[in-house]
Length: 126
Image (cartoon, rainbow, N blue to C red):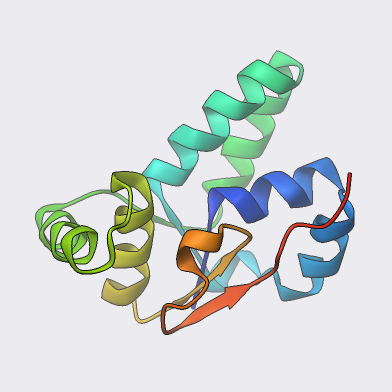
């Protein structure tokens, strides 16, 4: 299983050089866990950066994956990770979701770079 962080989704959707490089790492829908915080962040970014119909299309696509709502188990684990690794709340939720679902994380966010179970792609130009 794999959690695709918002940063990787955005690069992939933008078809940036980084997005093109990490596209081969995107899991199938059946193997992708989507935390609801990622859906929130994607909806926010899409509403700001693209046409309105893109929000509905991408969120509908994400709902074909394993959607992971923020529950008590993930929240408590995220609080522990936030304290242990100095992560922002959203990042801690993403990482905690991956741990709870026994998944790795695909990301372009340097905050995750040195954490176990992370597949990190540094952002490149454009």
